[in-house]
Image (tube, rainbow, N blue to C red):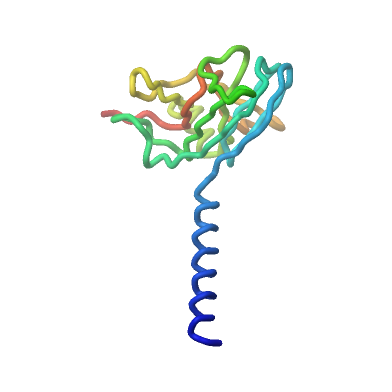
Length: 167
C-alpha cells in the first residue's frame, strides 16, 4: 500500500469515528402523533405519554446531560434530563399543553425508596423563573411494583428526576 493510499484509509477511518461519535451524542428521538391518539414515546428511561392527544404533529425527545443543567440551583438529578417538545405539522412549536400529557421516568429500586421517603420528585425547568420547580409526582405501577414516576405536564420543556439540595 502506497503512502497516498495509507492517508486515504486513515482519513476514512477518522471520518467514520467522528461520525459515530456525533451519532452517539445526538440522542434525540422524533415521533408522529395524531389527534385523538393515546401514545407513549421514550428516549432511554425517560419519556412522554399522551392520553387522547389534542395535537397532530411531531414529538421531539432529547436527552440532556444533567451536569449541564440550567439554573443556579438545581436538584441532584438521578438520571439524564429530557427535553420534550411538540411541533405542529407546519413546524410551529407548541408551548402550552391542552389535555392530559405526562412526563415520566422509569425508576430503579433505589429511586423508588427515595421517592417513598418523599425525597425524589420530577422537576420542570421554569424558563420564566430560571429555576427548577417540583412537579406533583405520581407512581406508575407495573406488575404491582412502581416502575415509573410521572407528572402531568403544563408546558413542553425540560424535565428531570431529582432530589432537592439544601443551599
